[in-house]
Every structure is written in structure tokens, then in C-alpha cells.
Image 1 (tube, one colour):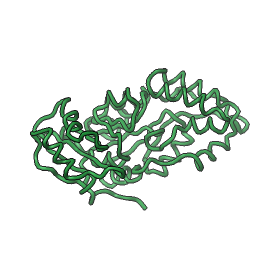
Image 2 (image 1 turned 90 degrees about the vertical axis):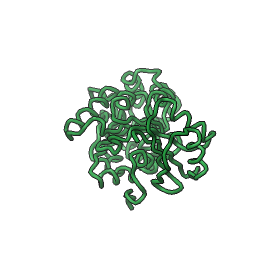
Image 3 (image 1 turned 135 degrees about the vertical axis):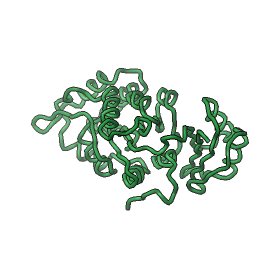
Image 4 (image 1 turned 120 degrees about the vertical axis):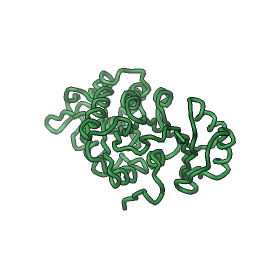
Length: 295
């Protein structure tokens, strides 16, 4: 079998045998189901696959909130994960949360949304938003991190499991180092890269240090880490939700759109629209008894 189609349930939609049978019926060519985690994730081996395979599986599911990913079997288990942070590894956009402290969330979040949809160039959009934060007390960053930032479920499990099996997880964000450093340490990433907010006399200056880390910098990070680790590019995975993630999603061995904006979901080889970050383990073929769940 050259390909595998993975069905993944979630906390609100258990994956049932009926779901699996419906997909097998829709595909007609799938091999025997292989349950990675009963009630949650199942593989269906395929002799071949094309762009219509996932669509056919979704037709069989008839609107059920089950994620479907199809990929080649070769190099399925990845040695490198490069992940976006905002709205991917965490559930918020940090810059929007900072804006809330100044009472300008609506103004900044509107720009954020347009940038993530690909309607605005990332760098000027970031400079404009950071400019609006001028004068925000530096102490607000820590308060926002402690009180407004929450991890996306499954992130710690994802990093711990990949690390336990020899993989490397890198956090590469168009956000800010203040947050990536803390999130990386908490979730379990081995490295992090982001933009640096400039501070003077205890307050934000309204500027970030150059060069700005955006779409191309994420691509470079993926390529550089692949070279440093001396791994096959096909052994890499990139995950994100916004337009500035499209480059690395396209260049990785498997690019995943995670609860993503439409422009990203349309371009990514794989989508997770319903599950949490543990879905990225089932995509790689991890079984329930291989998964590490940190305390």
C-alpha cells in the first residue's frame, strides 16, 4: 500500500466503526482498518490516492466532525516539526491580547485578521499594529501571558511524544520573543524564533527589531533546521493557521493547516479542522501506547 488515509475524532465527535465503514464504502479501494486509538483514530491503507480521495472520504462521513488526512506511507513519521505559535500552539493572537490592555483590541484584531487571511502584507501590517501599542507598559506583557494566554490542547503531548521518539520541535512565530520563549519552555519545544518588541524606559516604543520574521523567515527556519539535523526534507512537518505560514506549509514534507484561515486550508496538503494538536501524532502513525502524556 503506497498511501494511508487517517480518520481522527475529537472530544466532541468520537470516531466510530460506522464512520470507518462509511468511508470504506465511499472509497471502495481501502484495505482493512487499522485502529491507532480505538474510538479516536484509524488508518485506512490505500494502493493509490489523488486529490479526490479526501473529498470522497468526507462525502462518506456526511458532515461528521471527523478530520481526514491522506498521505504517502513513505517518510510518514517526521523527525522535525516546525510550528506557528499564535492560534496554533496557543489559542490566542498575542498582539490582540496586548491591544486589549490599551482598549484598542477591535482596531488591531481587524488588521490581524486581514493579515492572516492574506489580504495584507505581513511586515507592514505588523509594523502598523505594533505602532499602535506604543506606550504600553512592559509589565503588561507578563500580565497578559499569565492571565490571557492559553495553550491549545495536545501541544505538550505532541512535543513530548516526538522528543521521546527522536524528533525535534521548533516554534517559529511572526509574534514576539517574549511569548515564544515562555510558550516554548512550557509546551516542550527545543527552540523558538520570533520578533523582538523594543522597550525604552519600561514601555513599548511602538517598534520591533529588524529584520522582521515573517513568511520567508519561516521558510528559512524550516530549511536551516532540516540541514542542521541532516534529515530528508520529506521527514519534516510544518503547521500553522495564517497566510504567513503558507511558505513553510508548502515546503515541508507534510504541511498542515490547523483550524486555519480559508486561504491556508485551500493550499495545505493536510487539514485539521476539528481536533486538537494530538491529531498531528495520529497523522504520523503514532499509536495510543506510543504517545507520551506529560503530567
